[in-house]
Figure: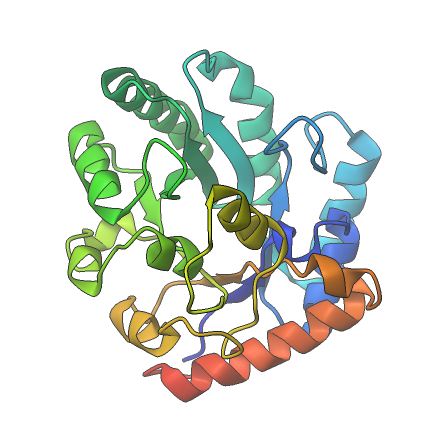
Length: 274
């Protein structure tokens, strides 16, 4: 048995979904993630909800290659979040065959955050989509412990927790914390590496996470322990932005080499082959 390995949009941020799917196919990846909503107003995204030609071409590449869209992103839960506004996003995700939505918490008021997240889960459920909350040190859900408490409070069958090694490490979360995550809350996880040294400040942390990560095995994170701790059947999404390298190496070359390196790394450390 081999497991699904995918390419997250942030890894090849400059690459529109059709080309991302073709690169994934050439690399031997099984799936991709697509960023359909921007993280910040000035960051790239691909609005398949409104771009009909882009949607058609993306669906054609899926049919031609067999590479699937696993997750769509990124939803920021904020104080003013309007759940009804995401209906076109859900519809586009369902049309793409997506399984998961990446969610980030940016509402500092705990009760309101829990209520909005619960209503978001309820709205996504009819489209067959999970809502996977990614804990990040600079957000309202900074670590595993906070994420577990929130999901227990929300208690929705399609709620989930998304584990990313860089955030796991930088948040001070532990393997003992990881063991408190209910298995049904885990739908997929992300993979990257980073220097062992903690960033000097928040600006450095944000830059590293958003623009300059390392490929698995190139940094100092204890990925071997994390791989052993994560359920073996989960899909793995490579999220490794390489902004500096992207200035001199094509997206295709980066994507193909990264997937092949990551599959070998995972196979060396996992209990079952990737």
